Structures are given as C-alpha cells and as structure tokens.
Length: 525
Image (tube, rainbow, N blue to C red; front, side):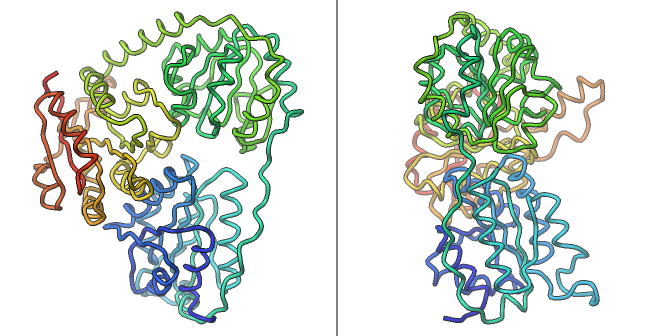
C-alpha cells in the first residue's frame, strides 16, 4: 500500500528488527513519525538530540543491534553529532535518520538551514548520504544494515528531503538475504598454531572485537596470559589466574609485554586511548586479528595479519588447539604480584576511590550492565573492577565526551528490562545531560545512578597542577542533586557511609523509578 515515504521507512526498519527509536519530532521530520506506532515500534522521547544519540548508543551496546535515532534538520543533526562521533570511535552500530531541506544552495533564510548538513555529519560517521528518492532511501537503509553485519560497526547517517518524506511511495522491499562476514577457518589459524606450539610465554590481548565465550577455555588450554582493552573487559571471565586485566595503560606493562615470546591481539585497535604510549612493547612475533584492514596495517607492524571477526577466529583456534603443548612460562604469582602493585599505584594516583568501588561492586549483581561517564571514579574502575561478563561495562573511551553515562544507561535499561543496569557519573559531566532523568522517570526504569560529587573537574585540576598551571575554571556551582532528582520524580539518597551506600544501591534495582545516589569523597569507610 502506498503511503508517505516517512511512514514507509519506519515499516522498513521494523522489518529489519528495529523495535525502539530514540528521537525528538519537529515540523521538518514529523512525517517520519507517521508510521512509528503503526509499524509497532516504541519511540523514546529524549529531552535533547544529544541524549537521543547516547540512548541509541547505549541500546546498541546492550543488544548488539543497531541503535536508531530520528532527528530534525539543522540543529537536531548538529546536536546528535557528538554521540555519532562517540559511536564512531567505539565501533557502535547506530543509524541516524534526519530530514533535510529540499534546496539549500539557491534559497537562503530557511528554517534550520545549514550550508552542508550532509558533509557535517560525514565528519563523525562511517558515511552520510542524502536520499532524493524513495528507492534511494530504501537502498541506503539496506546498505547500512548490511554493513552493520559484515564490517566494523560504525554510525551511518541518512537524510531525506522534506518533500520526499511527505510524498507517497511504494512499500520498501523485503530484507535481503544477509551476506556472510569474513570468517576465519581452521586452515587460517595454522601459522598461529605453529607459533603457539613453540611459545613459552604466549600473551593474548583481547579487545572489544574479540567477541567469543571461548577465550577462558582457550587461554587455560594454552597456559597463556592475557591483557584486555577497556572494551574487552570480562572476556576471560573472573578469576583467571593469568589475567593482567585492563591495565595496558600502566607504563611498565610495556616491559611485561616485551617479556612475552608471542603476542596475539584480537579485535583490539591498540590506539592511544588503549595504551597511552606510542608502542605496545613487544619485541617478538605480533599476530593481529581484526575486521578492519586499517588496524591490520597500522604502525605496530604485525608479522601475521588475519582479517576476520574475533568469534570465528576463537572457534577456529579452539577446534585445532588439542595438539598445542601448554606453555609453562607464566606463573600466577607473577601476575598477582604485578596486579597488586598496579592497584597500589592506582590508589596513590587517585586516593580514596578504590574502597568506594569495591563496595559498589559487592552491592551489585554480577550481571549488572554499567554505563560510565568521563569521571575519575570511572577511570579507576576501568583498571580495578574486573568484570564477570564481557560487554557489561560501557564507557565513552575514544571520543571521550562528557554527558554519556545517564542517557546511554537509559538506552541500555530500555534494552534490558528486568535485568540490572546502572550508571556511574561525575558531578560535572552529569550537568551535560541531566535533563534526561525525566525520560528515565517516564519510562519507570529501576536505574541506580551513582553520582560521584567532588565539586569540581578534579581530573583537570590534577592535570593542571602536574603541568605547573595554577588551577582555574575547574569549579562550578552544583545544584542540590538530590532535590533535583526528586523534582524530576526520581528517588534520591546521600549516604554518609559505605554501608548506607550499599543498601541504597541494592534497593535501587527494585525501585519503580530511577534513584540518584550522591557519593562524595568524604564518605565514611
């Protein structure tokens, strides 16, 4: 049945398993809203397009499915560019659909006009295209979903002129048969197996693209040690004796990596925000496994490169691993001593945070999915909080934007109804998107929001001091966060000691609305 293209697009998305769209309607994109309810899709109304984008990001990270957002021409698109940039750097599948003006070059003074909206979005996405016909719109949506499945997942932007959204169009075609991703087969891992057979101190580095539940068995069978990137935390599970954790950024980790006689990096970009130094530190064979050819050809200069997804590589390795003799060069005591020393360093660098984190971890179910913001408590947690499950802690690692935690946590909680989800944010970053608290209340989300309130941009203050700069512009007047939360209809608490904090966190997972839990560095241990 013919209907306006805006409505047909929603039906097309539903046919591709989209069940939630985040966004804000406006006069330019209202035709996109004509078909949402009819298609059986839930729409979550954000308070700001930045919030809508982070919600889509959080939803995508929780489900593995693309997060979808609808925004208007001009300012709507500009407002969601920060979340798109974050999704690009962290390999998150996100589809942003926007309206655009029918003519932007020959006519001036129009509502929401930009010089080059499509080009602006392209700077923070995998690609940004304009669909001037219904068939072009359908083709671009199909292409986006195909690429989400086959290649490194990154955000895409499709804009459709207002007149096209309003014009009647035939229905979208049925979904294509999905393509097959480049997968590793047992013969592909033969060179790696040969090296593993002679290695005494094999070391694996597991990143966010290592996706497999086989890594614990593989590492155990091989007697291999491992590091993870921040995105790869939990890949080896809890308690693996040869796990160095997400500690690649420790300066002397380079020396340890240099002591390995084989390094295998799987689904790990090994960029600046993973290492905080130029080189990995290895002096022997480096094996890289990644979907992205740009990663395989980077400055780390791997000797063996395999373009494949981490899951198929793990399966192929596991299928052929029986004939590999387990290595004996790593000792559990060596890893335990190193991790204990690094934990003490963390406590010295940012004192008083580790006891709070230990107490929070004990108060949360092991399968809690956590969304954190750019804040000191999260920086410590990324190294010190070992995860029982992979992909259960999400942080704005690459782009590094403030304001991520709350709206992304809302998106995750929408995706995980009935499962525990939590947010950890700092007081300053919370200012960026705190209005999205109203969305969490509207949706009745049982969402603990741990707000680390040190009354300043403490990380920046510390950095200024280290740089011998007199700290300035690092203190902002905070509201009464508890009263603010209650004004939105949320619950709140300001525990004075660790035990009160733990009790409040536990009860927050069962509350009918979100609970803001304000924690300060003065909390009594």
